[in-house]
Length: 159
Image (cartoon, helix red, strand yellow):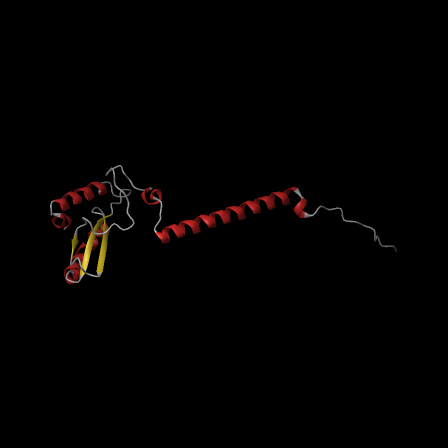
């Protein structure tokens, strides 16, 4: 019984086959894109930390359909927002509300009690948050609230 010692396996290695080459090219592309994405994220992170954020990133999502010329700001501040409480306090509660939101309406009485209890120590600031996708007249109500605020009658309209 003689063994065939001289037998050679002529099978091509996997990485030299057609699908092996496709796999390696795909893997290299995925790794390259991942590294490029990582560098981009790192660069944007450094810009945000240093405060050098390009304006198109801040203002890119501003809906100018209703109020032309508006610009998003990193910190909107208290500017003309209706508020109750001392302006020099360290505690500030910002209330984002939609005039048509039924849950905001349900919370109204509790919110009123909280404001009455803490208005001497906490500044409560109202901000419009009209959810137009689910409340048809939310933007119009928010604009009416802004008009009432300009006339000094915001809280009468709000309540």
